[in-house]
Image (tube, rainbow, N blue to C red; front, side):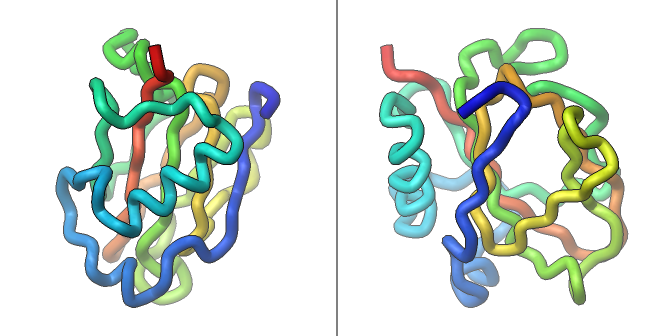
Length: 145
């Protein structure tokens, strides 16, 4: 995968599975999350979930300013690959909340129920603010030593 690019695998989570997730930290052994990690490993076989890696379901109305997932202040330099799945339907659950990459800052990525993943240090992005209920599963993965 080239810098400034991402992969999207459609419909990796069902509506029922998405509805079961609550906001907060999650475990990598959750069957739905484990399935996402297996899919990411088809492109990045060296991702690791045993060290500092973590995943959570987030609902952040104010969005996120432009950043890399290695941390604005370098606090997550270990982050190798980021994965995300939008768990809320943008057609009915919320307004706004687009996910934008620096290489194409005018195209909003939603990817409802789709796995979107990319190299964390190469893909600057931001999330627009939203109204309503927008939940997203975020996975921050290390590289195996």
